[in-house]
Length: 331
Image (cartoon, rainbow, N blue to C red; front, side, top):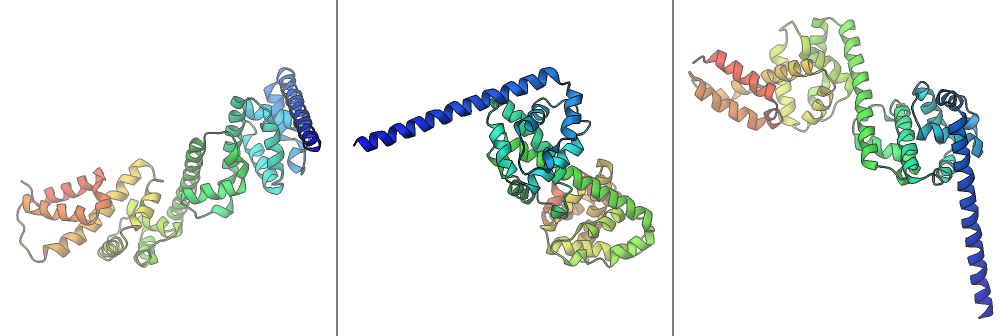
C-alpha cells in the first residue's frame, strides 16, 4: 500500500515538474518571439529567414525558430516567399523528423498564432509541392491532397482550417495546370500549321481511349479553337460522336481541360464541339425523314441533348444548336 502511494507521488511529482518545464519553455520562447518582433524590422527578418541555416540541419535551436515563426505569424513581406517555400519544402522532406520539432515549438504559441503560422506555412509548402514531378499528370485534386498530407502529416494534425487548406491546394493546383496547359497550346500553335494539326487530330488515338493524356488534348483544343481547313471535318466529327457516345464519362476529362482556357476560347471550343456532334446526330436520326419546319427539327434537338446530357447544362451549346436550326428552317 505504501509502495503504491509512493509510486503515485513520484508520478505526480514528475508530471508537475514536466508542466512547470513546459510552461517555462513556453514563456522563454514567447519572450524571445516578442523581443525579435520589437528589435527586428520585418524586411530584415525576412532576409534572415531566407538565408537561415535551419533548412540544412536535422535539428535546430530555438534561436533559429524564433525568426521563422515570427515570419510565419506576421507575414507581410513576400519578397522571398518562393525561396523560403522551397527551402521549407526541402527541409521537411529531407528531415521528416523535423516536422515534430517544428510542432513542438508551434504548440507553445497562442492558438490564433498557431493558426496563422500553419496557414502561411501551408501556402508556402503547397506552392513548392504543386510543380513537383511526382504529381505531374495527376488532375484529381483528391489524389494530390492525399499525396500532400502523406508528405507533410504534421499539417493534418495541426490546428487549422482543413477545408480552407484543401480548397487552397485545389486552387493552386488548377492554376499550375492552367499555366502548363496554356503554355503547351501556345507552343503547339507556333510549331504546327493548321493543315498539319488537322492531320494529327484526324488520326489521334484519343477517340478510342476511355482516358487520354494532356498531349492528346493540346492539338485537339487548338483544332477546335481555330481550324481553318475543312479537310477531314466530317471524319473528325464522326470520331467525336463515336467517342462521346461510347465513353460519356470522358466529358469530365474534356471539361477539366476546357476550364483551363480563357472564357472566349471556352465558348469557341464548346460551340464547335456541339455542332460537330449535332451534325452527326442529325444525319443519323433523320433516317430519310422529311423535315420542313422548325418545330419538327426541335424534336431532334431535344433528343440530342438527352443523348449528350453534359451539353444540356451549357448555354453556349444550346444557343449554337438553336441558331443552326433557325438558319435551316427560318420562320
